[in-house]
Amino acid sequence: MSKPVRVRFAPSPTGPLHIGGVRTALFNYLFAKKNGGTFYLRIEDTDQTRFVPGAEAYIFEALEWLGIAPDETVGKNEKFGPYRQSERKAIYKEYAEQLIANGWAYYAFDSAEKLDELRKQAEAEGKTFIYNHTVREQLDNSLALSKEEVDQRIANGDAFVVRFKTPTNEVLELNDIIRGTVKFDTNLLDDKVLYKSDGMPTYHLANIVDDHLMETSHVIRGEEWLPSLPLHHLLYKAFQWEAPEFAHLPLILKPIGNGKLSKRDGDKMGFPVFPLEWKTEESTSMGYREQGYFPEAVVNFLALLGWNDGTEKELFSLDELVASFDLARVNKSGAKFDPEKNKWFNHQYLITKSDEELAVLFAPIVKEKGIATTLDYLTKVIAQVKDRANFVTDLWNLSDYFFVAPTSYDEKATKKWNEETKGLLQKVIEQLNFYADFTSLTIENSLKDWMTANEIGMGKVMQPLRLSLVGELKGPHLFDIIEMIGKEETIKRIEKAIAKV
Image (cartoon, rainbow, N blue to C red; front, side, top):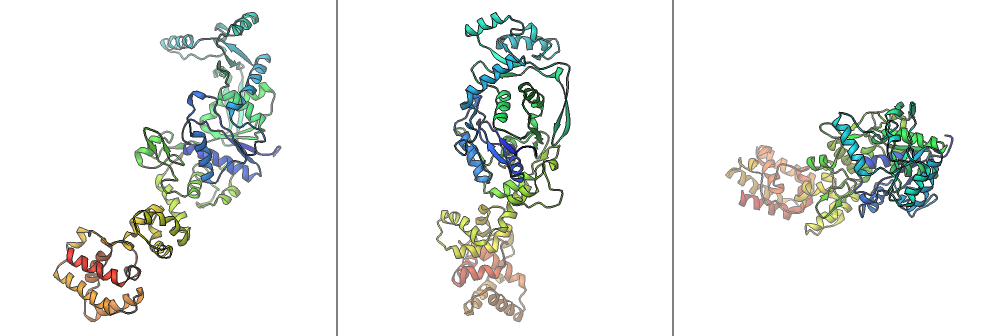
């Protein structure tokens, strides 16, 4: 590549970071690391009316949790700082004035009321009002006013914005790494506001100036920014700067129906769309971290939303993703979000963790239940049940009988219980009392020998025995459960079931 790779993630601190934004950050991170480059984070907070306290800290914390923290950002390796646009305010005015001086932009004094009136008038005529070459010289701006009038109005403190003067009669043929050649007719574009009357730039001006000054080599962003590409290309041309390469990522789509994935979809279907929990006075939004997802599972799942390495491989470590990542293999079309597949990824990462590691994660849950136990015992429990868990939080429901006796019994399964069942369970207790070696294999062989010798059907004993110990017809190998809870607890549970059912 002609210059060092520098890519950025540039969110606005207007609320929690959506999972679509996380994927944009991830693809930038992967591209930077694959190419030995730099991934930096810039906070785009020029719209102070939408600023939400806590949102900036949330963004940093989310990326740290996911393992894709930036190389440069606010307070970290500030090679091109400041990294908050609100702290770069003085920079943008200079560039807005440069565009005016070069004939690429102009002052516009039109009031919001006047523009609203023009829009309504156009609507009444079945048209759409566009502030561009068709009307700009008839409106209240420096193209229609003399220089003296413009200077006087600015001196008087009249409110104004700076608009880009879009060239006419051009067809722009621009290259997108993912989409190939995309064409835009400049006659259909509006003259976007670049600089506002409050002294702050709009996204368009600040974005281009900062990407240039921070030496951004590639702009990898969401598909929703594709309509801004012609303006951004023209701004680079106006400043006579070399433009970065652009890549517009496909949307993440709803699991059901059409359109972009939204918080509402997550609320309705019970899955998170934010990396971390987000609380306001009115509500709490779910987060992947708090729902029990492993960060590496979230990263793996997101990477495959719109990208693949050309094989059937689905499980990638972060290092493997870096090694395999290629923007040329990003799809043009949107990727449907699949909550069940998301859980599947978490399950895959859970079962590859050691029993000891999961025991440490499970310990606080067991402690919360008021149960004192050891990590060694928890490790043995994990080994019995983890294959059926998607989350660490699932482990309690899968293993509660290893810690506490059942308080109820599956009604459907106990309907077949009769006096014979109780009598057989009583005889099982007698057998268990004989066994000095209380290990799974010994108990299993001894009980089965006893049943065979007495011509007792396996089902007549095994089902009620499992119900006595577990409360349901679920769980791992029955004799492993018996060994783990021990002789005294096993007999106590059988006696309780005989009395209660």
